[in-house]
Length: 189
Image (cartoon, rainbow, N blue to C red):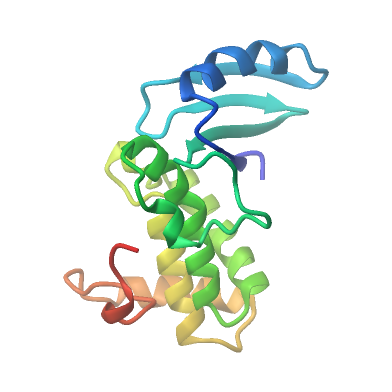
């Protein structure tokens, strides 16, 4: 939808600093055809370069690993790479794709989940109930809720799941946690 964006994470070895990334990359990108609405947010919880690319909003974030070279192939789910990381902004940047991947591993049918999740996010945005900044669930929370419904009804179509989404969460006690994994599998890497 026109309210969607693409999140890109640039993972680099210790030889490239975040400050260099945030100051030297934007002028290079601005010179490219199709790039517009460039904003650099170095003080955000996850520092990001926001831009539009051919009309699609793109968030480009950065994570520096305390390594001289990255393993090939790179596996964002490899928890050993978090060893010796001290910068919380780098850890937070890596958290996004790690959580996304973990959620996708928990759903019975990822393509069906993706359609449901897009529909839920679109509804939440249009209803004005989307976003941590405004005190409402953000993308991860809506994703977990969508994954939960997919787990409850693994054979349903996205349209049927959307109906079940509203049924489940309108009839759920507000004090109950929504879990898509056993507690024994949750926690720090």
